[in-house]
Length: 480
Image 1 (cartoon, rainbow, N blue to C red):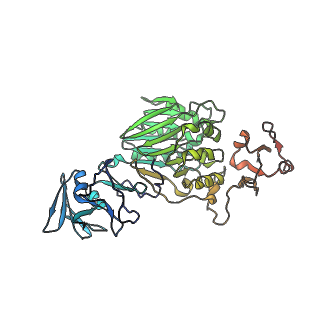
Image 2 (cartoon, helix red, strand yellow):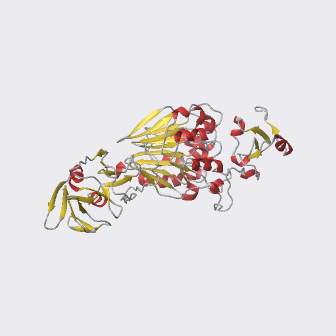
Image 3 (cartoon, rainbow, N blue to C red):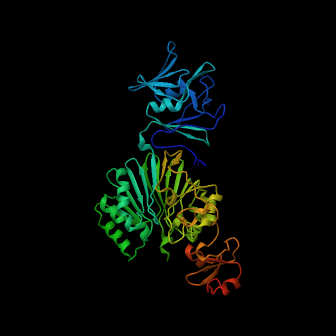
């Protein structure tokens, strides 16, 4: 697993290669996932004074499939592949592609009687995609077109979820937001859809996940639909289910352990968490993108109880779509200790009535050294990956002051650990009891019923006497 890649500058077009300064870096250039072999005679890659990767000319370009030569008169290294000729003058801040001068921010060099070229500018002139993995100090080169890149779009659908995965001509949609989001989701994904949508996943029956899916199914041919297996009498679910069962040439099934091959090393996995829970959130379909070295875990609204019962099914990942919009009833510390996300995405609506995300959840994620992004701050969040490195279109990191997705984050008052809805000044760390301001019951902190209290109804108490004096009655399950 490649860890701590969140600062990689990778886009689906041109990638500006810039790496920490050093005299030499470990041998690593990979072209189409195959390492380039460098020897003592050929020389080894290094970083120049402009902080750019310089690589041995002949070894690298021949590995790329070029015919190479040297013009002693013009002092140019020349590489030819197909109908493209790239000439690289020594010591000049430009190169030539088919005779057209292209500016460059560094120069080719002769070092120890060997010719070295700036790999980014030269290979991009041939149409390659170039990225940098700082952990393994590897230049990653792909000669494929942009279908080798996967984009994962975390749509800004307010207090709801919708995630679109685009991998060449293979598309997956996980949830479709609320009823009112249907047209937006359709219009957003339309430019990316090549023919059919291969898979639609409805994580569970709640409107904020299935609401817009009937619009999507109506607008596109959908080949396969997976849902939690739970039904509901709500209008939103019925609209989705009627559209799903009426879709021609489409298979529909409840979730179970499943691996779907997306092609070229990419897989989409369903992780079965069990069914038949009373709470629809606990029946959420959990899925994972597994693309070479990169893993993205999508949790739906799965709750803490189910997380903890299935820890053995989780593993170290790169990106986490945080469960239940950052609610305190999901994303337990035990779960985070297993998955260790580098980047965490929270989908929530600005000034939502549920006071999500929860400050303690944000704090737990930050304590894991995870970069935390929220749709309510960044809008649509787009991840781009070639399976070995990744980047995001945002660098707006959430802090505990972004709890409850208030219109403007407080820069002076930390909300971490405080039950905002109750006005209580008792934090979760200080508390011995938790109360529900709606039912007026209080519980021990370990009580399952207490763990399910909505964030907006949470209040903490230091002592049993404080709870009773506040008008709260003890839970009959945990007997606090």
